[in-house]
Length: 251
Image (cartoon, rainbow, N blue to C red; front, side, top):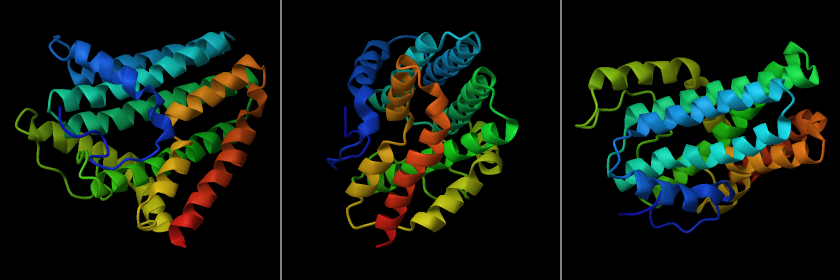
């Protein structure tokens, strides 16, 4: 099946806890008539459903399904790898879908917990930067290990479509990505630099900020009836982790 996400690099990525389950699902779907894009759509619809459940105060069920969503979110990438068909369209759409889902969930929590609009916007932006930081080091680590090359640190140039996808679709989704996401990638790149020699510290610590781990933390807050602490988690503890990674990267 080839090398994994990070190629030949052995790293501790805490957000990858669901990857073994995703690989099982991907092997099951390998010969099935379902596309990678359709898998991405499934986890988007599931996230929006979770947002609706949150507004209905079914928080434990919603947060449990967000954990499940974290596994499904890894299935599309694993399915592309096992079929040996990476996709630029899939990569960009996955980012867009994740962002739509994040906005929906944060707005739902805002309605439930009666946050003001400024706080909701701040939490969304903070979470996007945290995801971007993890993605930045994840891409750099893939480069070190000769792993998945679909994602790039510098997305300014439109990639050439693979034979199984259309160039006009790549062009469209690349433009969408540049408009809505390139600015945050650029800020993270300036702040983070190239990182340390092996990037292991940056990758492991920033992986706590990835959706895979954050969904478990949010579920724990829901189960213990501490969702009111979500702003402190995102703006406090997570920002401390982000700062420590950036400092280590620059030392």
